[in-house]
Length: 345
Image 1 (tube, rainbow, N blue to C red):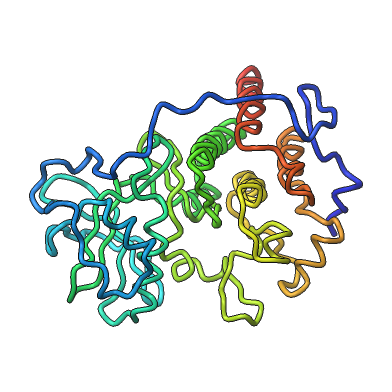
Image 2: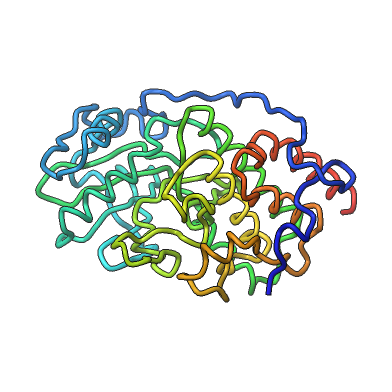
């Protein structure tokens, strides 16, 4: 049984003392929210401009507005080479746009319902137009009827972070703590940038991150995650599947989604990194989770997790949202910790 957070160290300073709000800052990344045109697929046959027919699929006005910012691709311009993961109705493929450009493609089966299509488009629209080295944003979309919608992303050659971590358990070359902290740094940088734009992710977890050929981790949207990672989502009788084991206490209690709630989820993601994507709160009945957290209980410290890193996680899980560190504050501390880890290698 995990100990209540009140009985353990909940914060940090440079020498391990308690301080949940370390004075630190982060410079703004040299990137901006543009018009979503991107450069990866520029000039390739199949791109037809920025006007997309979206009304027929029945998604909301905000989603339609976001989708208008992304270039469209003619049906058939995307070719599928390998099925990466499939669910009940969702599919993720490795494919190509034209003859040379690798792409990750999210789509649904032909028989998907309008509700399933709308969910794909709504979730995929979250990061449209966001440009950052640690964010995997859609670059192209095909939403023209009669075929299913297709959302194309730059291809992350090492795949989904959750699956990547799980496969590493059996690898002859184990991921070091320093590498895992570096992954955390990448994600924290991306989240700090999203929050600077006023974007709340709402579903931050390793399943919604990808790893590119240079081992850069990138936050992606949550499109299709409920279908492709069904064990990570639960329903409390309200007909709404949510990532309950990653959500903050206030999100569980009141369905409130804020930047501080994202920070709580970020702490759970850090825990996922160290455990190589184990299921958080696996021993807790999902219907008791809210009371469990309200009583002060938190995830236990994983084996081989440095005290300094676990203290960071605990800061993210403070019951009072305003007492949680910001991503910029977390970034400052993790950068120093990452340097310190390098001194022992």
